[in-house]
Length: 333
Image (cartoon, rainbow, N blue to C red; front, side, top):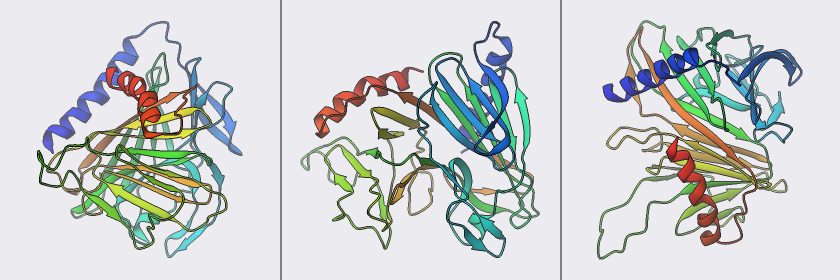
């Protein structure tokens, strides 16, 4: 675990150092009105744009090609979840929670302004006030590469309380409806070569694999949104391949993350989960559980990439052919 934290710290320092050293940077950060909020910030590099909120959050509310549709959902206040800690709203976009999920702790409202700090030319940091009920401070740092579509999101939880808490950073992305989540299976190996299980899969009491939204294949687990079916579906896995995707209207969103063999993950061992209901789709990744001492922090990194003109065809074979060059580009960065 110590090596993982050190690697995350090195990543953060490298981002800041490279950003500060680059001259003639094509990334622009500007304050904009968006999502009916006057104090958003847009990072753009001529190819893609990322918009974060500061009147609520921390949240990333938009990620798209310039002039294109948002791959993230914009839900507004949506269906309110009322708790003893206040009203929680889905809003949409990308947020940071701490696992495991439990009411009311998980649903601490993020309805207040956050502190915004620009770090170099391509990075912006968003810090939420300490949650009074949990003693946790949430920090999200968003970095946009000078060229291409790659976004690095660093999620940090800091324990400002008085005692140790077991938790895990939990990165949740609400996708724009009308698409399909893609989670890779472990590579196929015959029974003659491998006798032990390949990985963990968690299902919920309401998970129903006979539902038409699921496609369970040899290579991938896929689930699609369906506006006519409001019944929720969810699955979690130990995603050792380190990526998951969402395909919508020929655009492929891929988030990549690490898997630590032997670590204790939430929900029975899951570092990747997806949830859908109606047009709602959430693509989630989770860090290992840690015992976070008072005054200490833990960070967790996701990398995002966006591709257009993706023809996945109708079979697992055509999907694999479409994904192969995209994953090679992700891995090369």
